[in-house]
Image 1 (cartoon, rainbow, N blue to C red):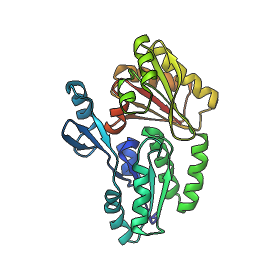
Image 2 (cartoon, one colour; image 1 turned 180 degrees about the horizontal axis):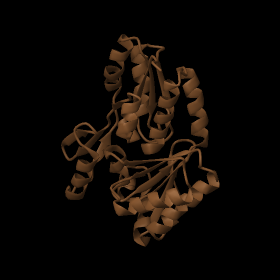
Image 3 (cartoon, rainbow, N blue to C red; image 1 turned 45 degrees about the vertical axis):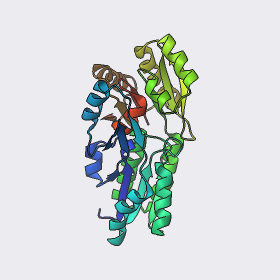
Length: 280
């Protein structure tokens, strides 16, 4: 069905291309910086290029949020064309990007710009975009879509295992003390998104296999029947371990649909390589 809604998200959603194309979603990129070189996530550096550079560059990268003017430039052509805009963004507790979108809305002074805070990132954010796309295609209005997204957000969960803590501590998402303890004991931290959109350590596990099983166990404590559910599994260049996890999810949770994705440079900068996540 033809509708007048233009969907936006940011590159932290790691939105799979087939979803982007199916619902004509525009992605506003954050930036990743290696030394003095700045790249636009997913535009001037692909996830594959990012992980190759991460492995070879002695200096850890950093990220920059989207600024308000970049949002204005992205939104304005669609407003001029008469579209209503719905931007689904990265948690405001993890980046200033969502606040930049708020400022852009004020600068544009338009009631046709609508903002939804996913309180998540990566494929947790992407699942919100997917739901919005499906609802828009079904003919729902933006207020109706936001109402459904709020229900989804209340029931959502996101867990992920990191291979090492260096990147997430350096990025300020975990304390140095938590990072030091984890590194000394070679612990695989199991993190989760809180309802407030922050990241916390949920559990500390000695092996990757135990951490991955723990993610599945925790999913089953949240909901026992996934036969009509869409789940998402993401990884930061985790290779065969990720494929093993996908098989575990399909066998034990039996979701109706499982979306798989490689994490891009925005989230990958803070998670580091070898991480795996599960989102609903």
